[in-house]
Length: 140
Image (cartoon, rainbow, N blue to C red; front, top):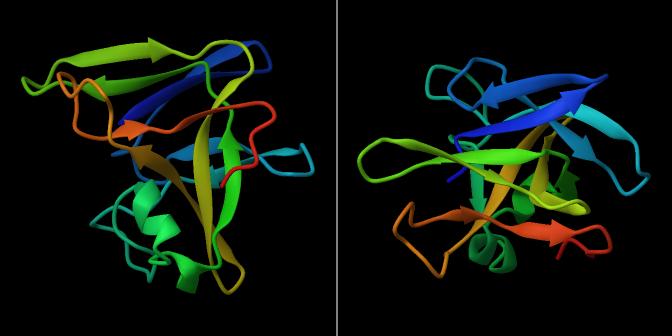
């Protein structure tokens, strides 16, 4: 389900893991500005945002996220990490021009980003996979 990501910030390689409190992801908005948004909500965090850091693509299409006024975004990372059934981490590189699709959820003035997931063709690593989109994707 994408438990970690790696990206460059001013030439420095950054690794972010979901369990880390206040983990943030680099989000490219439609304006092309990149901003760090807090990645989802952990069990120990208080708040009204959904628990976890992921949003199933089919749940978005079915309106489950509508109450959070979701905004589709691109998450600008170089690679993402998945753990297999034995708990072993595997890193997967994105190609140039590829992004992970994200959803920014809104409650009042607060924002959180969630990684959009899909069911993968190959479930040998994990049963959910980040939805990878290209530069020109419409984010639907």
